[in-house]
Image (cartoon, rainbow, N blue to C red):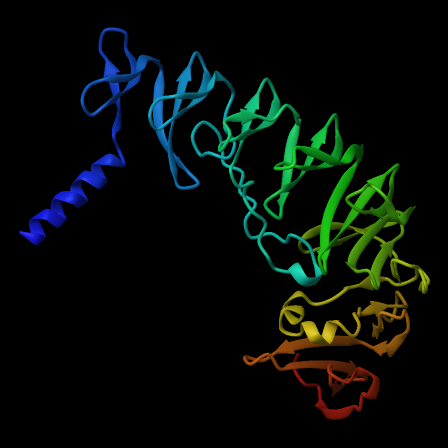
Length: 360
């Protein structure tokens, strides 16, 4: 008796999850929604009706005369059939998938960006993007030509008339006005640093649109407040097996500009992504680059966050290796000899010859 009663309760609950169903009117050749009892919840006036699941809740999307609308599971109209598409839903358009990309550096390195803002649905109408609050069934008035990036389940980088800005969706507030050619949000120790482009120059601002780093350089790469890579305008292009890329000179500085290296380096790599993930304590001490200082000889060295080389640029090649348990090794090649040093104590580097012509 107990087993039968348990099974009966389960069936009632399961059926309750799908109390509404889509039906087809053979006379009008249209679709509607009705309850299991046969009571019509939504008249058969739609060319198509699809059942959707979004953030764990069930909805219906109806299409009429080429426009789509949104309905609750009970058939209540949430959005009339006036919209081109719902970009967040894989129904009438390709879904916008931003997962797996970087949301910033510093403490948030490797965290995937959210695909959307929780409790909000992105909708497209007459070429403009809006956000619909699913918990309050209200449409935010602010319109965007396009929405490019999502951050921290609240922020977006959006564009209007070709200019980028930052908008807080739950707060329904424009934080950074649409004045910039491009924006990139970095988060370091709880603070936001926005690399921005204005009048063909790059600078850094905060969420109050206050300038933290002046718009003086062609391009910037933010690593931390203590370490910023800056670039000259490309003066030539180089071809390689993967295509053609612009050729810049590189220099290094910090947010306070207490130091600034000359912008003379032919190549810079601000840090190795894989190594960072295993050694955050190490990078709290300093950041580093390896850089060419001479075009012909292409010598490499390491630069500290104080703007000074702690490994002078005299090596022809540098290779990094991470072992299974997170141990880090860096090999330097000079005159066909291979040397290693400890990343943990870079100021006390002691080189040891490892052999001739070691394969790297």
